[in-house]
Length: 235
Image 1 (spheres, rainbow, N blue to C red):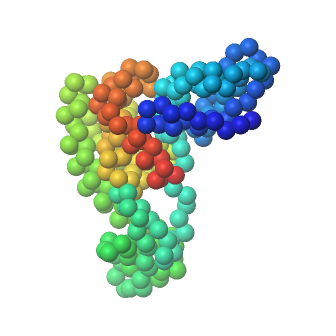
Image 2: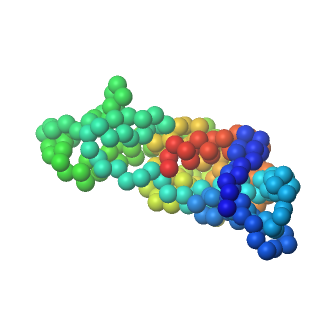
Image 3: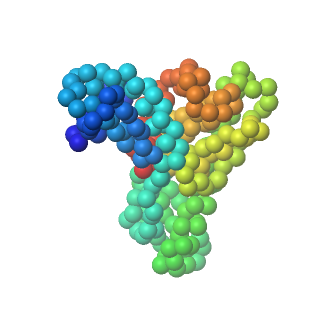
């Protein structure tokens, strides 16, 4: 098995190439977004690359689908000096003993004050509460800014909800409610916008069909680059 890659627009697709006793080329995209290509023995390398390139759009669509279930940032330990993200930027965590609990952002630090800084579960709750309060502000603002997009997609006015999710960046149900993962408050605003537009497209197409991606291409032309940025930053 060898490592190969192709360039499709601004996206680089890496894949594992193997050879076997088969008559046609096989391509599999796994849930971890890895790509496996199995070619007939004695296949020409350039010919294989051209065939993979012809399937590049499909491969990216499959990877985008699996991204919705991709693991997020590894578990934090909630100790001083640890890095935490907020709107795409890295901040250092500072724990301070204090009779008054608070979370403040200043000069590259997220400072959490509490009575006993050794209680990591309390630090986590305070920090998550702070993230949620920030998400309520930014998510609602970005959602309102993009709401005009839905005028041509549905006759109903979609609503926004948010919660902590383990496996998805967002979702859209049949009732027109868009759900965002509160983890997104750690990502750059453009990445939050991408997820919002992605889910708004589901108001017209509750699937990941070619029609869905055609609409996404129209409404958010740079979605592939933005998706890669989100993925590279948050996993």
